[in-house]
Length: 217
Ligand SMILES: [Zn+2]
Image 1 (cartoon, rainbow, N blue to C red):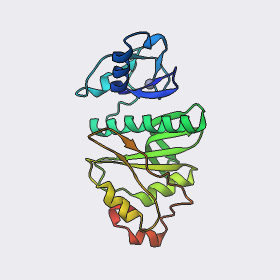
Image 2 (image 1 turned 120 degrees about the horizontal axis):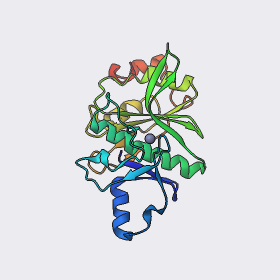
Image 3 (image 1 turned 120 degrees about the vertical axis):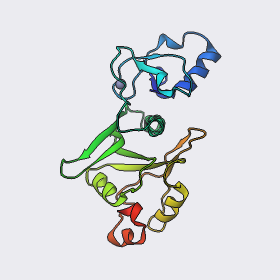
Image 4 (image 1 turned 180 degrees about the horizontal axis):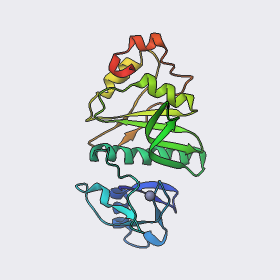
């Protein structure tokens, strides 16, 4: 993985950020443990490069990487890991509470569910979806299911993905005054955009009729 929780500071850092800290301080950074943002196991750091971004951190006990899935491309996974960092640090800063966060997890029932790229279940419920090559966004079904299970949602668009986030946002703003998030593929900065809630975005039938099918259905 490329993100790690630096417990002493209570926030998540990326490998390149930590590498910079080490170069600047050159000592005793690791008197405090680094832990996995997902499972809290201790992590081992190794100097790496952006050609092999997921090798910065690994579970010290050798167990499989919590971010590794067969269904996700490396580029999508990178955006997911950076979103985990942005979301975790934001919630931790605002609430001051421990954050329980996971990736690729179900929300809903077997009959009616979505799989959230990033799912926070404490101290509040948030599902973040990172759109990369997905053709159809299915926001009507996705948001209905998320809201019905007491979650709110961030929608983050990879800037080199299938859809131009500016265009998606212009469409959505015809039905709600809301901004989407972005993963900037060049700078690797994540902006989360607005938190979609049932109060803000209903995506009623008439709303869905005003949106292109690839967004709403
Ligand atoms: Zn882990």
